[in-house]
Amino acid sequence: MEQNVSGSLNLFVHNSKEVEFTVRGPRFVTFDLEDDHRIRPGSCILDIIFPAPTKVGEIIFRNYYTAWVSILIKGPPSQQPAPVGKQGPSRAVDEEVSPWQLAVPRKVIMPNPHYESGSHDLISISATESSLDWTNLLGMRILLQQPSPVWRTFHIEQISVLKDLPRRLANSNNEESMSEKLSSQTLTALRKSNAPEREGPPPKDFVGLVGYEVQGFLLL
Image 1 (cartoon, rainbow, N blue to C red):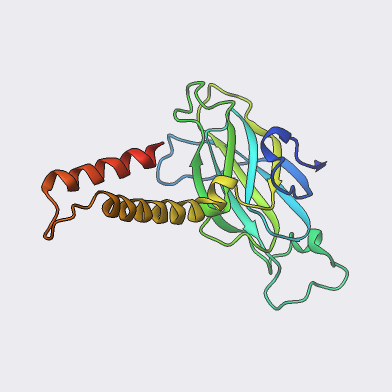
Image 2 (image 1 turned 180 degrees about the vertical axis):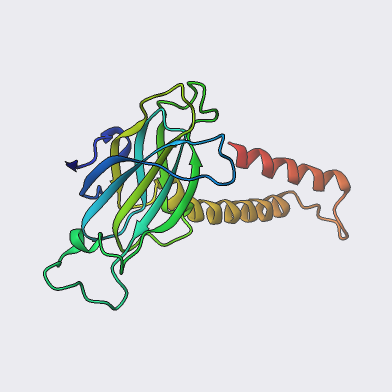
């Protein structure tokens, strides 16, 4: 099944550029688990296909009884032309010359698969959680798994793909550097304004006062 999708979580994505994509699936798959035959999780695959190589910063979706997800990504074939008659990113995604690569393994989105907690949460997965780069993608494959027999139906819905990182992550480095700069400047100013006129090291209670003032200021 294919479905054209543009983002739907306007409340959460209005500050970031949304990426156009097509959804294929979900389709159910089975696995042989040699390590533990007692656990055979229900599994399905959902493919997100982009019309052209795309930078992705974040993917957001609403959970529906999925216990954990893994994300695989696919980029353009490295230095290899597409076969004759199979041009274009949407077809290249299906070629073995550009394999799927595991980017985010087994992200738990239900703390306990047998209970309701997390079953309808809004989930955000950013490029910073990936072991691979998300700057030139043709597709993303989401593997959904639910080992509990309690929930016969599980999927994800309301999918949005955003080009940029979440604001809290994109600004984290700047915020950290500004915080360090503010702390340093404040400490210097307090030392100068409260420094005793006499020569020699300041008294112990002065050092404690400066530390308290800086901490209190940063917490505001």
